Image (cartoon, rainbow, N blue to C red; front, side, top):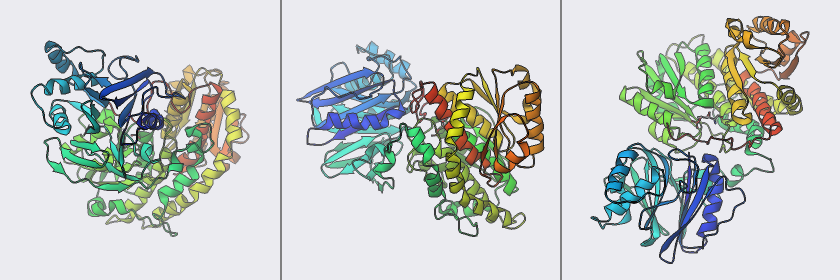
Length: 611
Ligand code: M6R
């Protein structure tokens, strides 16, 4: 949540460049935005509420600039609460992503000392703390920031500029992401590496408890206790084309459409033609995983639902007991770990605060944390012992789409790998080889599913007048029902709910009528007859029912008087991938019909970096 972008150079074009950088980070928060420049020995800023849109900056071009796009936590959406924030003297400018938990006490203390606050944000206290510290300390800016960082509780990624040091900026990180872009003659920093791609692919990921002192020609990394640290430079393997809309009206549509490719990228080089899976990222923990008996998957939102699908697939393939737990619930409950357990964190961004807290918790419980992460070098990638990268490419739309399908594919690969590597494999390798080979056919099946868009559009029209939509599924399709409900709530602001199909008669059906239709995921599998009966029960009560099935299921259900959408037949455990494409298109089309801001739904942000 919140995006930070900064530029330290010598060629006086920073303000407009920072504005462009902020535009590419706006999906992280879009309540308000602002930029500060150091111009002729003065800090000058502009701040605005609302989205950046086509705005141009009114600031003069100068040597150092940084900006911020906000997702409000402390204080409403007002210009005064927009970042950057200044101290009383206008010497320090601060941009911040995260939450300062001891804000109240610090604010009280600073007010007592005579500081005047102009906003309700927690960020402003940092500027005043810097001002206060300079009364007794006159070291360089990075040392000053390290003194302040030690006083802050909570999570933060900070960018600081000092009026009296015009060609430098200092960053500090504890919890929030920050990446530094390296080029000849100027340096950049951003909350997300994708914002740096138009300028450079050489980056340094700032780690927790690190401070970076940046000048146009140099980057120095220090720990919070002022020890010099070696920085390692990473080359980004995404290219700039990946972060453009490519002629699509929205990122969400682009990301839905690129799923055949993103799935291929997730599987590339990892499955051979006999279906054997190789996952280099797990080699370091191969021995540990050989006899693992319990895996608790954790994550939030869409990633959590992918984890639920993964937990079911794993149990179909191996004797490992597995379960998915929502991170925010896990963090404040006392759940037991049986012998030989590991925790596996599923996250697109790798920056979700609840997930990071879960990692700290499992470490304190002496459980090994593993990751399934899309963003290379993200906090989760750094804090887990080993794991698998998703390689789905940058996901910009707030609604997660291609990450979900890649997460399911990756979890299926992990299940195959675990089965292959067990010391006492169950039924040999054939079951995992079968799933491995089926995975290879998924991109084509997804490409065919994308062609169903006109049918899905029709379905969206039929559903758009409903007062509530209930999604139902069994087995791996129950998490898909939850994901469908989330996608429609998020993108179309629609009143939805996801339920296990077998629960229909245990309550939900009493609240259903012609304005509260059902969408049932009913593929051809061992439960098709049960699903058919449930659909008939709905139809018998005149409840409009829409079925999403596969071609084989379509034959079995074709005599029922309901709308049916048929996706291609895939492995029975992989159906949530093809059907997720229908769900995503449905949410997109409904969002369009209802005129929603598809890529940036109200009140949301792409990565949730606060609890
Ligand atoms: O980056 P993460 O995968 O950890 O994000 C988790 C959720 O915040 C995320 O999936 C959220 O639910 C999406 N906006 C759903 O589309």
